[in-house]
Image 1 (spheres, rainbow over the protein chains, first blue to last red):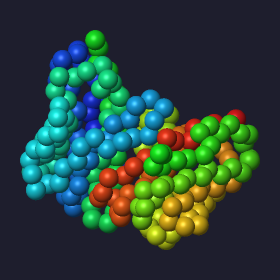
Image 2 (cartoon, rainbow over the protein chains, first blue to last red):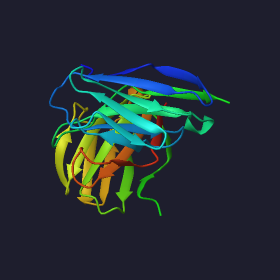
Image 3 (cartoon, helix red, strand yellow):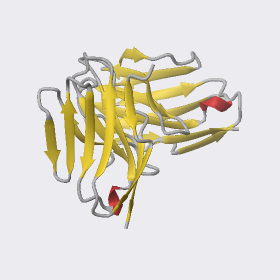
Length: 111
Length: 113
């Protein structure tokens, strides 16, 4: 049972473009939605996170949009740079429970 | 200063062997985790300890046994290694439970031949 569905599986974006990664979840009890970034050979690192009391959170070039009624959330990377090339994971959890990760999106930004 | 460290970084071994992976965090966190990342990069939690107490134990074969001697350490022992155990194993820690930032170690790449 895949509780968090992530798309696309891979994404190629031109430098300066917008990268968009989408996630959908099933469990309405989830109340914490982080995005993790993983570079090759490294462990995942928290990029940005949102709780369902807000519809959008922005940190620099990274924005999470959250749609509670649709049970969807997405990551937007503005002005994408080659250094953003990595694997991105969305995740979700509920109070006191484990993080459930999406399957990951491999992003490649072409210079 | 490395926040979450794992040893070894690489582990190549034969089927049937027993091996251990060690993890240490110097962040003062209460909670530690073991994750498995398969060849398709899918990341799945295996275990979670909070203050040395096991709180999450996913459907993991009994051959995998975590041990937490203190809240800064969480080791993973694997008995009778199988080909399907080949993966990258990540240790992580967080201040309390899953709804806070989890800090991942660099991973241990296990290859079972």
